[in-house]
Amino acid sequence: MPKDEHEFANQVRRDAGSVIAAGGAGFHLFDMFGSWYHGSKVRPALREIYALNTFATAHAGEYALPRVAIFTDEKARLLRDATFDVVNVAWRTSGVMPAIHYLSDLDNPALPEYDLYVVYSPVTITAAQARELRRRTDKAGKMLVVVGPVALAGCDFADSAAAIAAMRPKNGMFVRREGERDLTPEALNAWACSVGVLPYAEPGNAVSIGNGVAVAHRLKGPVRVDFGHPVVPVNPLTGEKGRPLRIWEPDLPVGRSAAICYLETDQR
Image (cartoon, rainbow, N blue to C red):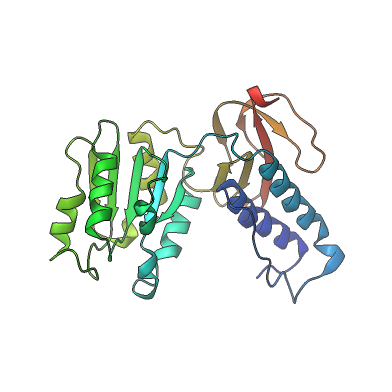
């Protein structure tokens, strides 16, 4: 729990900002610091995240979708205690901004196409989901990464080897990592580069970029975000636009965060 309003502001900017950047439209604030809600002391931070959310909502659908997706097994929450902690730490400090899905999303024909599919501990994967992963990644330039135990609690496969054979693409790239802790920030960053995705940052700091919102929280070295092309920075509180930039380098001490909004140059 944050010890004061300053730690609260840095934490909520990081956490709520990552939700907005990932395409979420809301978040719940709980146990701010010391005790419960402290009125005037937290209003500046609340105004800032409200402004980030308002900007992202106003420009929804105007930004490119992620090219990387991570799939977790929603039925595994009762079976694999570390699932969501491992996944969240990995992507949030990888420098990559993925879409986050459940395995059941593979049953939805409206699911977007991605270049990199990372499937984490699919212990209840079905035959239909395995076939869909193979169909989506069985193309040059696509990659399927399967991390952790496979098909340990499902009904469609006799063993893990059968499930892996069912989803393994012939033409796309395939990576198998057996350990649940093999999904690391460094690995996710490298896999993204393998399919031609330019990460926003090197692994290490918590960086979330998407839907017109960029958030950085320094955990290690200096923060350096590369948007990949020029964007127009926007102050979320005032709406003031800055000069186009490709590289964003907020000067942050360790433990501090910063957030900006941005427009593509053709949105000005």
